[in-house]
Length: 229
Length: 285
Image (cartoon, rainbow over all chains, first blue to last red; front, side, top):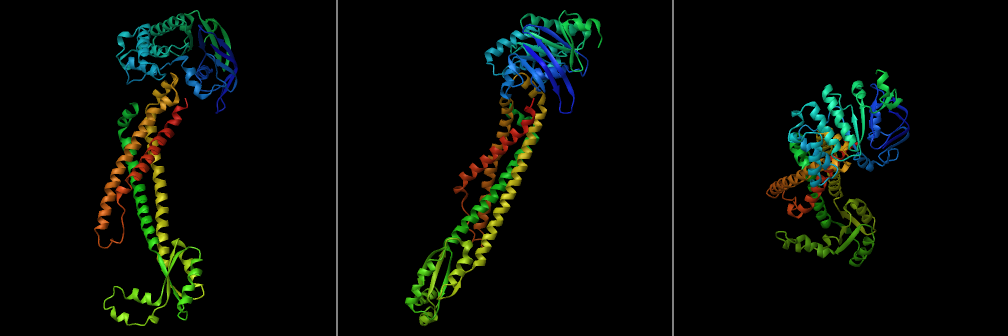
């Protein structure tokens, strides 16, 4: 669960990125976070992943109070999250299989667990036949599937996807969104940050719209149905 | 394993760091060994060091012997040994050719004297002045300038060694920090992914620290054997030379253990310290 209570975030250069954000995303939910460039979406992701700390207000993520979290607890909090990026961020010199095992090794998983879990997520994203390929041998859509598999491999309770379809064509984008929907149906909370109107409108999901550091609407598909960004 | 592989991936910088550590340790080691040898020679000189205090000619034997207590009471005087005129004559004649000629000299040609040893050679001048101030002491025979010269040389050598070693240590630390920083920079994306997956700082840091450790310890071991070779060559040259035979060179074997420990500790500190400094910035994700 994510809980923002009147959160403000100002950077050292004086930029006021967030101006009193309050929202709650419950366990098992699927939500889109939408808004134009510079609206504060990236800051929200950075706050959730504890890359930056809120300037004011309270922030809870999966039971951790990010206002008071000690630095040594941050890695443990991050293990409850799976993060997906627009540019995939795969390690080019490692195979798909190694990219996934690497993500499990860093959290100290046993070889037996790694073998079992990697096989499961590869099957889930439909890439079990390409496990020994390197990222540059795969298409953009396939690379994003690998990134999703990596985000899932440590069995997080929540997936945060930052513009996951930004580098993909409409068909691949739809496939990725359907995959995320499937993951959500399996019980994982999913928060997708995007500005792709058509894609958001194809799914009847909660949409939180943010502009200029403030939430301007929060509801089922509401914002994009009537407005353009 | 990652750390070990990284040494070869960034071969040139690793080699530069290794060479820097070797240079630093060799110069540090050489200066330290020169200082140890000087100290040893100094100690021997101090042990042998004594000066003579001559008693007034007008003093009889009893009066002359009576000065012993006063001289012993002077600070820094370690021991005194009285030598009568007759004993002085015999000592003077000893080892000289045709010493029968000297034996025929009357004892009065010589003066009663004290052989005085001091604790601290650096205070020789002050001690000699105090001995000269004792009523009944006519003159002294000491070489405070030579002693002072020795002190100055040793102090300069120690000062230069400390400054050079400090500079070299800092330069080595800087080079190894940059080597690891370069390796870290090339892998910053990987580190960011690791951090995002929930890796702890120690998990990320360990391969880099290991890399620094390998470079530091390898540098220390190579330097040790090179130092051994250089020292042996120089000591052979000194002992084989007629002009430098007064210089006593300590055998390396007796100091090898200490040199190895100092090199290993320094290599460890530079290697591990450099890595920890280098990686610090990249862990703040």
